[in-house]
Amino acid sequence: MYLCFRGYSNSVMDQTKKLGSYPSVLIAVSLTVALFLIAFCGWIAVTSREVIRFVKENVEVQAYLNKEVQPNQIDSLKEAIGQLSFVLKQDSKPLIRFISKKEAADLFIKDSKEDYRLILQENPFRDAFSIRIEEAYFHRLPEVKSTLEKVPGVYEVNYAQAMLVEVTDNIHRIYLTVAVIVLIFLFATILLINNTIRLALHSQRFLIRTMQLVGATDYFIKKPYIVRSVVQGIVASIIALGLLFTFQQVAVNQIPGLSLVQNYTHFSILAGIVLLLGALLGFASTYQAMSRYLRMDLDELN
Image (cartoon, rainbow, N blue to C red; front, side, top):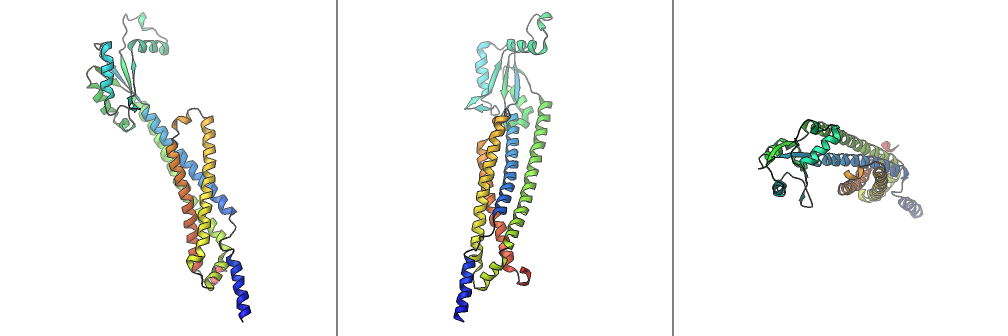
């Protein structure tokens, strides 16, 4: 009797050495592909958001000056406008560009191929400031226009309202579409990983039940599987992020101007989210599948 129990005990011990060691290549590949798709869509969403910000911050409002403004008053007027809260600043320097009426006339002749001097004796254009606006004030441009026109020395303020509304509406549609796609991929990934891990653990169901019969606690049985799944999720996240970073660098080198809308701070946040997501997916799916098998009756395991 003792020898039989000892032999059974040794057999169980041999099995416990394999506890948690189920075939994991399929899970690792599935996790990597799924996390890469999520990371890729996340990068597209972040880039779309940066494109919106770039477009908004490159909006230029034209403030035309009174003809009575003298050249020696230009700097003081520029300084006064630069102190307004809606003026975009870079390194604490207001992004305001002065355009003289001569420069405006030369630009008109170059673009239109028509010389106004054949009809008019004097330059009809005005000196102007081209002012870049903070993103937060993009939807308050009428208010910006009204404020600028109250500045002494400013004659009139203009901006391409119709074009800006059309461009930003299209960009917002793209951004919302990408965001929806990311959510769909996330939902599909959770289902895919959950089913893949459940199928992988199916081959371990009798080993799990054997451990229960010899008195192992649920925690003791779950621990190796959960630890392994979390590690697999983190490794899959790292591989997925490596693939995404490689793709991003190739895209930046091949697509002109794409580097202008790359925010590496947001990319780092995205990387952290993907790493956390990989670990959480591995943990949650394995925990759920393990709890299911631990609650099963013997007849349901077949």
